[in-house]
Image 1: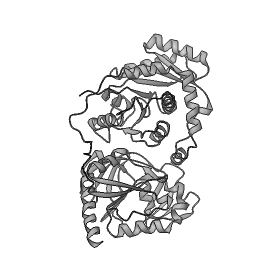
Image 2: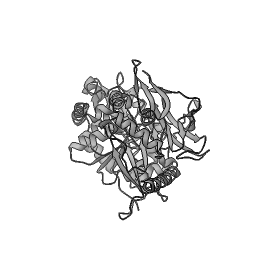
Image 3: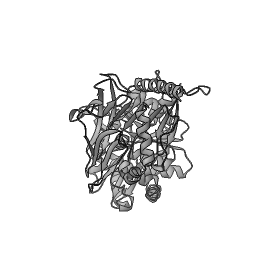
Length: 468
């Protein structure tokens, strides 16, 4: 049955064109009008979705056609946009940039085509007038299947400058120019770094969101944007569904403790939903606030985040660290990724060279760097049987971190052979009931991981209650 989902894709001519600025301004403006706005981000990024969530009050979701199949991506969009008045999908890089330079695979363009979603192209018009029309025309002709429905001009020198660009684009390209944003340092998005997420959660960036709303309300025709979104065709759900609504009477079979606070807060929403769908009760706790691993946990999930931003607080809490050591040593099936992986090591060495003792479960030390140490898609292949994967099985995910890890023992069993743009490397740590690594795995790329983890949690739970 076809479903109506008013939606737009905010795409750019390239990174830095102003996608995030425009997206957040539109979200804030429509939110103030009383609409329920749902945010999405093309690709695996999690900083922009954190912005979206802060503005809209609804968890933003990633739409990705490399980690997941087109049907899974479409299903995530339909599930996430349910009950929303308007969905705004922020693109990644330039409209046609993706996994493959020879095709649209993994690009914003591919997502727009698959979702049959109108695209609003953000064009950085500094030092341009009529040439802006040539840029838009090129994007129109490059792939006519991409439904470019409008343009927003960014970094205009003045309203007069904008009017010149508007006239040229509308005459030559036949699409409306829906508005403009000025060159204004007060609306510049902070440089991307991991410390942004805690700042967002603390509300430190709220004044920027308010300023973006004011600028967009002043310069953009919101009524026309809403009209374009409402004209998006209805979508047919995929025939094969992965995410099935849980029956109300179904009782959880296991309890999985999930570390969730300002230090550990990156989880793909679908990962948590699949755990619940397969029978888990998720029990959230905060290591940062002094909460140990819950006693009734049958499994433990320590997601990505920013332990380096709270390294002193985490290091000082011996009771919490001891709870991780004790529970994992007792056999608690544990999956830790990126920030969680870092926390389970012996120490994090900050950028000043100071070592801060961590949980001490994994025989390794983490060193923080001033520059990105890894960024990009990863396909992992298990090098031996582990908590989630059998030897040779694969899953897909993403890496983004500013640290490197050095093992402190020769016997350091890697979890995966990880394949990325720069080749293959051994990554992570897998021993018994513990699996950890830098890669953020998307469970929907291989749902068997969830079933396998749930089975391990079930066995541990029986043993815990029997020995109890």
